[in-house]
Length: 170
Image (cartoon, rainbow, N blue to C red; front, top):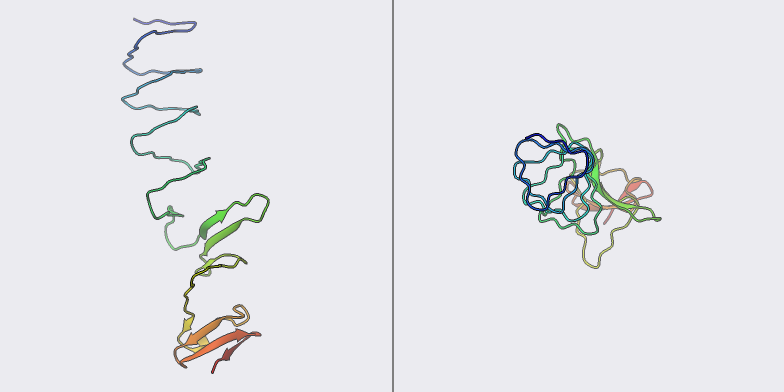
């Protein structure tokens, strides 16, 4: 039976439709069960909760999640997951601070180290680090690292960078 409706169609009970269905214009339902897949060829808005009982795959170049709380069971977040070949992209986390300057923790790929910009790490505990070099010639620029302490294995001595020079400590 083929039927064309030129106005509304109201069904006051269950409706079972087999075959391919095509809907144009606005379509709404209080509750629907789809058992053999759903293809949506345009923008879709879901005005209430959506529960997905399986995996969710988003294929696109931008995913925007407007939420207040994110709960992730995975303890590792992978950034630049589409990278191939030699490493060339910086990556990190940036904190939006409204009218104030944003803050970030970034991996600087070109220099091969973490950066925090001009900020200062503060702790009530300890920050342990080792600036250890094989020879005096391996020490980095004292001008760039003004105020840095270092140890040189070849001499067994400590060094301090000040005034553009490395100063050997007693």
